[in-house]
Image (cartoon, rainbow, N blue to C red; front, side, top):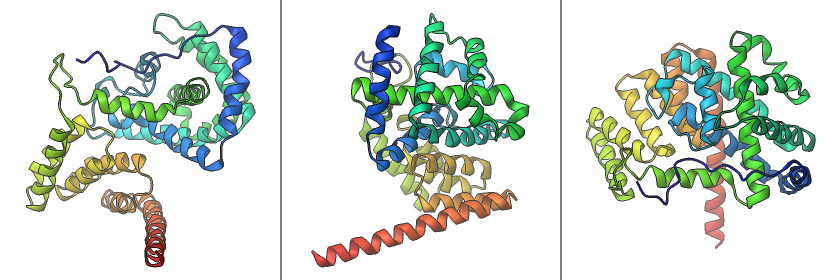
Length: 335
């Protein structure tokens, strides 16, 4: 494997307590001085990054020690590692819990005090952690004393009390996701999410085995096109195989998940189609076609409330797309 591609996200260089105190305010100020649009964009990216291990089998969003806390504390099943196969019932339940928690925690990146608490908390946890191991006993004990944690957990407690530890681990994991994004931006001047997407793209071009041979992007495109041809010819099983192969090379491609979901639906693999629709929507939350498909799938699975919710989202984004289309047409005519 090429030595130019890191095996995982590199750790941020450690700094001592005094420097951390000095820099902390600068990191937060640099983050919050941006526009509302920047913060909203970062919130979308935080969600995508946090869900990488849950949906895409991608573990490059955080240093390996932080990914391990998901597997070691029953949040993710060990068999899920590196897989983009359909989620089972238990995994879907955990995914829904994680999404609710992550969406709620996203609002914290708008507040100076909350950011300071989160960044200091993660700093203290990492100070206690050695040899690639996160001291979760310490983290779970300390986070329970944080007001920002209490405000996040209180409205969720009744729903997720039966999965309390896993829910708390998800909150801590998302706090680290926030920490990584804010500190990278402040210290390195880099968008951590963009860096991760580039890292995934480079890493997945290489075969997973210890070989030097690269799987080029051209080969990936051929596989994608083969899938489209097979789909148009009604050879859905071949299309499914081609899209799945392409996803092994390009696991963060929303269009591939959308196409595979459409194929799974025609094969009446409803759960698999729903999983891929959800994957596509996390990567592209404005895709009204995927909202419509997800609504159709929830209907097939007799989950009427969710079907109605997804249908409303589909109509919302379809109307926005139509308005944008007419706006662009008007601009083209004026020019």
